[in-house]
Image (cartoon, rainbow, N blue to C red):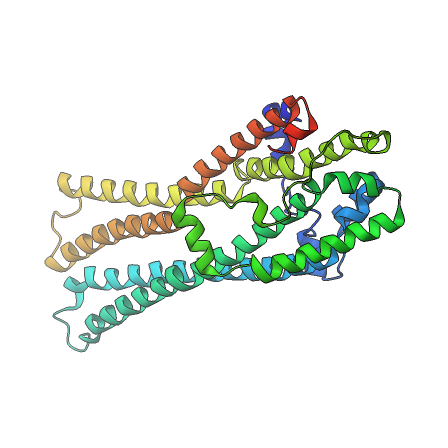
Length: 357
């Protein structure tokens, strides 16, 4: 698969919607229909019937979707409040910039007060977005990633038991029950709040893997029954754990990716505002616009120049808030990390080494 990842990023990503669908999460269309279907999981169970019992965890899927829906809602609200805050702040500054046009006009004194009110509203909205909605969104997203981590570690750490259970209905049921017990422990202890999210980030350290599942049992020497499934398991792990993440990152790096689209329109507006301001200023310097204009028109030209400058500032504020450049760099680095991990995974000479990657 490493070869596919290295050479096929563009091909993978051209499938316009590499949807987020996986074994825990149905596609967007399925979620919208709210029928509880997950074709990705159904297809997986058809292609890998021996591992269906271990990968079909209804309770985990239900909890995952609940928190994922919350994370998506909070992200959308945070984004909307950010846009609102920046736009209201832009309008407040625009009113101030236009003051030469109305400060001597009777009955328009209220515009100055309006600009102050808008400024306060913009500040409060930004604070709500940054310190409340963003923290709640990241906390919820943190939880979903820990649940996804649990899903794979539950398989990887208990691999000997998993391989032994295949084909034995009693053992399969016992494995599934132990998975549910581990999930209950996860829900009680490790589905955490914003504080835990902040502590993890502040410490700049990764979560210790063993906190989500029991420590890995020794793989040991595989018997004939286990050996026939070990390669299939690692192919599954490579595809779902590494390949899926690489494809998603690759999608974000194409022209159709969300981050690329965001970066594109921001650049267009910013360049348009700058070029317009430069062109207008050039005309003024050349005397082609100001010649013969009375004082009022001169003020209007000045306000237009300030408005264009503020438009550039508004776009820059949106870009900083969305961190589109940083997002693109992050996805680029993440994709490269996935490719490296897949190469190491494929190059590993033993199952024991693969389990540590």
